[in-house]
Length: 180
Image (tube, rainbow, N blue to C red; front, side, top):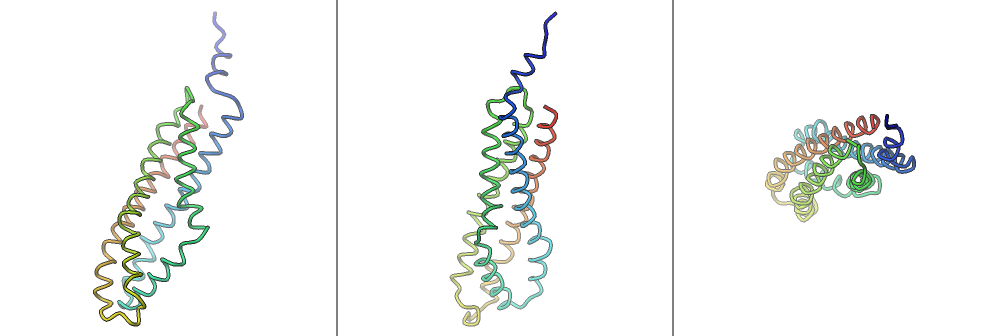
């Protein structure tokens, strides 16, 4: 009769490595949750509230938001989700018997898509809105708004769905990691 306990112990890995994998998954889940929550808040409250504002007010508020959001707390979640998820994937790569790699890798792909949408759509729109200048001096704020709002709202909804999908994958990875 073969004793399987030593095999299980070597397959599972060193306790410090297991702790590192778990901590990376927790950090990825938290930071991804922060980003998903931010995008969700814009989708269900900020943008619907601004939809009822006048054109000049809309442009001014969005310009202010786009400046204010560039801070360390935002980057902690936005960039942190990418980095911590990548670390979680890397830590799970050499692990035999860990089922968390699949959903963690899926989360990374989804979150890379969030970054891609942000870079391809939201940032250029934010830059164009800033380039429109001082809201009180814009000759046609309705035109500036028309070139921004609908596309920004759609791409933010896409970011919301992608980051929520990434978050769900990370939650599932945590469940699977706990079962390993």
